[in-house]
Length: 288
Length: 289
Image 1 (tube, chains in turn cyan, green):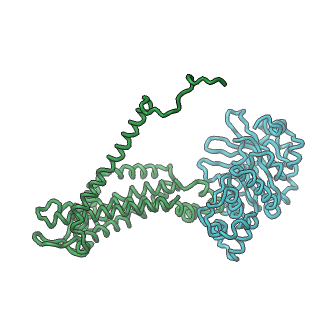
Image 2 (cartoon, helix red, strand yellow):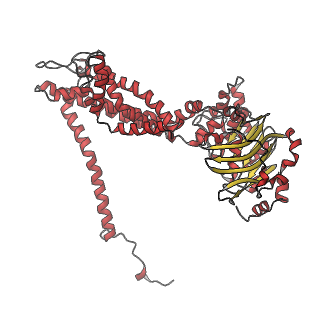
Image 3 (cartoon, helix red, strand yellow):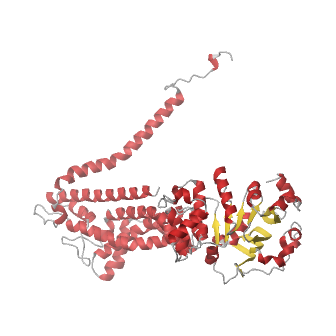
């Protein structure tokens, strides 16, 4: 996949004036606190233009929330960040994702090693059909972890706030846990290898309110050590957990359904003083 | 609320009311059909136990077939022959079938090669088994210049391959996609995803397919008729080889009481073998839950 040069200006499309309002202005000074810089020009599935012109810097040790109506491409952008979309037929990415001094879409980059450094938690809890212990140890074994496996597994389970619930049944199958526990197990599995960035794709959408709350509290603890990006369908959740919020919307003007970034700002700022009319309407509940 | 009983429908069961009656009759027909479907299996089983059970003894498992007017004897060589040839067939078809299934299910499901392979496998499941025999005769028997257990095994493998391939493909496809995504998300290569996550989960389904294919191959006669032929002696892989199915075919047509009795007993042994394999495959299939 050849990334086209960034000079093709996105401002030619009149619907996107995000350039003037989002973080582009501070781009030059950013890198210090930006862990990962996601610059989407175009994302295609086959001929279908799914997302365009979305520049989303992910700040270090903060939670970046992606919100927006269904089909606005927020999940697509998130999954592009660790090249999960490569698994989908016809997926094509134009743009750059700067991470650790490299563009992860560069030809020389191995998507497998990208995914080992950028962890992912999915919408549906998806533990492996293995024991709780082996689920967490999975990534460590994959990376030929040399240290004390038991210790690292315990650390990850503690980090995911599930240790006390499972410490006496580490040999039980991961699938025997409740939905909320499974999701925390998946988080433990993802953080066991200590990735720099943790991506979460609507991690609470399959969970009840109590489990959701536990996961949210967990996310806030996690940002001390990790950089987190989360897609959520729930605006209140973004308010509760996200430091930065990116609002995506769907552009149907050209006949398709193309998602794009409307506005990105620190969460408080975005919700209290949205710069875009569309953001205001969405936050106000005029459409969803 | 006024009491107006006339307009209330009656809630009491009325078995002879038209709708209820039709429902009863239709239910009864389906029960009859279900029972009727069991009749062939049970009558065969009863017949086999009645006619074949009489000669069931340890002798039949270790003795060689009797000559024309001899009494006693058994078909130990045929049991060994069947197991050996099914073993060869399994050794050929299981690795090929599973590897092909991985390609069809996971690597490139929509490629031309995959579509052709899938179509061929589906056609092969309906292949008349005698044609598998003809093919093995033409390729193995004529090339080697003699009938052999190898040729029989090759013929049986042609029948097993499509069953193994198609059931393994289904089993791999059935592994939940989120689980595979989790593996990729952890940074597994496609091979690691397959070996560490997908195959272990698909294994019960794959084993079920393998056992069913083995059961089918064990009972086949036609592919062996002109590949392994028959033999009155113990297994020698490069010589004509006895098998239960061909023994039944040969002996049931003989004019000697002893041989006919042995054919019945061999049928019983074969059915029990297939039956046990089916139960095993069921047990494995249910464990996947």
